[in-house]
Amino acid sequence: MIDLRNLTIKKAHDHLTKGDFTVSDLIDAYLSVINEKNKDINAYIEIYNDIDDQVKIAEQMFANGTATLMTGIPIALKDNMLFEGHIASASSHMLENYKATYDSSIVKQLKNQGVVFLGRTNMDEFAMGSSTETSAYGNTKNPIDTSRVPGGSSGGSVAALAMDGALVALGSDTGGSIRQPAAFCGLVGLKPTYGAVSRYGIISMGSSLDQVGSFGKNTEDTEILFNAINDYDDKDSTSVKKEERILPKPLKKKIGVPRSFLTGDGVESDIIKNFEENCKRLEKAGYEIVDISLPLIKYSLAVYYIISPAEVSSNLARYDGIRYGLHVEADKLFDVYTKSRGKGFGREVRRRILLGTYILSHGYYDAYYNKAIKVRNAIKQEFEKAFLEVDAIITPTSPFMPFKFGEKLEDPVGMYLSDLFSVPANIAGIPAMSLPSGKNDIGLPFSLHIMAPLFREDILFTIGKDFEKQV
Amino acid sequence: MEIEDIKKLAVMARIDMDEDEMKEIAKSFGSILSYVGQVQEVSNLSGDEVATDNIENHKLHNIMREDIATNTRGEYTEKIMAEVPDTESGFIKVKQIL
Image (cartoon, each protein chain N blue to C red):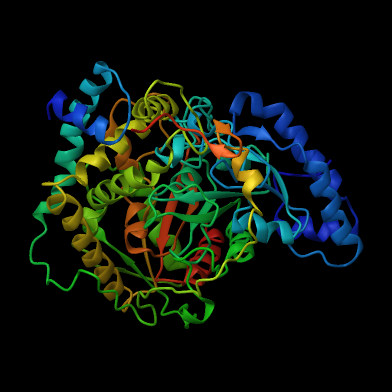
């Protein structure tokens, strides 16, 4: 029996190199867990049918000495990532039969390293949601407490990892979709710098915000998977060349807390209490914690819910029922469009497309979209100044603990507030990571959220590892 | 927001929906727009917030490439056409437009 609970990438690699077990043994162990638990948890929508072929390639790499740290490592893929020949549906009826016609760049990179993709995981439809409840394929349960949501939108990926149905997982994060589910399931989640990881072949939501990132049981695994996909890609026009990225500098060992931002409405008191403990833990680890002032950061969520629906309405215009995706027959072309889109998209997606359409319409464009862009740039500048004084900025990850199914589904603004602390990093394009910071009295996980300057993921990993020793 | 406004948006966005949903959306837009309307409070912006990105070594710039084909003719045609719901003799079939 392989101890999956305590397995890490390095440990697995060690065992595979020594021959304690084979890639095939490792994958079988994960598949048997999936077989046992997925029916209830619904983390995976589909287990791929070519796993055996992937295993053979990985074993070949071990046999001929070309194996890397990632070779043979079982990964869960979010359902919005293209893997040639496999369905990628964004958990929407619109794309339920859409077979990827090419590999996304991240899949290609990982294929070259011989990873094993186990399957595609459930998500909020087109990544719009914070609970995975907007999926067209049913709810995913939080493996820690199955009466609660796993967070979202990458809820399936994180649940797959939390139930030991994968060793690491990939997600995408537009406003918190990696970090908030990681928080809800007691795991580590990283949203890298905008432009660090290629989005070529990832189903778009908000193109000025989307970024692909990694999930792990600890900082080290999250970092290894990030390193495996962190590369320039000429197929993504927002990808930043390696030589243009900012290089690591020594740390000041100083962390900022935007104190007045933490006490807003709806932030649970237990979460603040845990956050204060986390500050003490970091002090113990040798960091100086200082209060900083970021007066505009509180507008990030409002800015997000203007820019993101605007980009959604434009990005999702491509689903027309004509070229791919769901097609509903009608007499007139116009009706083919409206019926295909009406039937293909779920309720929350329809709502956000209409919201974006409104925000971008004549007469409202200046008041909402243009104003939001200005505030966004001011927020970026505010972060830039703050990072002259501190290495990193910390907050809780989510303003509330994992909630029960249905609790926030009928209250869009309440659901949107899930992103309160995670969204500023998307607005500013900076990297951010959430990591577990203890549990409450009923065993639900708390989480610390760390933000760092552009391309300084190294700071997140350093602080993350120091913090893990204190928890 | 009135249901008539939602109807117009649905037409612009090419989404067929029933009246009940329009009513619900009209209602939720009230709370969403009042929340995002907070951005109006932000004043005293210096004016250089638009299109400035003076972060060290990371100025925004256009990425160009030579205008040359990166694939051979027809290389992906079969795969892409396999996803098209309605085709005829290798063409994408749509309803009469005019």
